[in-house]
Image (tube, rainbow, N blue to C red; front, side):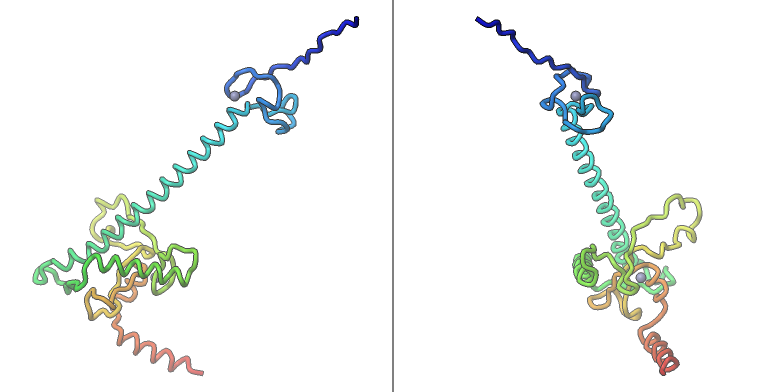
Amino acid sequence: MTNVVPFTVIIANKSCTKCKEEFPATSKYFWKGGSKKSKLGLSSWCIKCDRMRGRVYKYKNATRLAKSNNIYINTETGYQKDIINGIFSRGRKDPIKTKRKIWVPIITKDEIYHLLNLHYQHMKKIFPESDGRFCSYCRQPWTYIRRLGTRNQGKQVRKQSIETNFSVDRLDTTLTYQKGNIVFCCQGCNNRKNQVRIEDMVNIMNVWMERNRT
Ligand SMILES: [Zn+2]
Ligand SMILES: [Zn+2]
């Protein structure tokens, strides 16, 4: 008869630095490898805690992305609505009371939004993988920046436009907002073009071409 001494493997316990629970120091409870500093070549966090960290990270990232997307969409919707509504509210003003010429739109809001969508499609063809929010004239992306904290600084300051912002132009300034005459562009291009008529532009171009003819 031989005496068989029962052979037991003694496995040290290791506590997770995250949940502070103790587990056998094996790859069943801790990731193998990891940083050289960790005892026994095992991860300092238990597998359960580490998987949780990954899940929390993914969740936080997803909500952060959704949030920033949402903020952008809300900003865009709000800003465009203000600009487009402005076209219609100005069109309802009394021409006798206002010194400026009143342009009464002969297009509906829905039709303007439809044209805006077509503009995005058109610009996406020119700039693939973009969102198509580009000025028709300078082809730079437009913005929706609001001037904050100008409440008590007078009309002049409040009215100073942000040149990169979204704007709706009448291509032919002698015509109102109507199909074929609406151009989505940046405020800067709109401002610069504001007082120039198409025929002026043709004349200017003629002189310019004449001078630059080689
Ligand atoms: Zn743990
Ligand atoms: Zn522009």
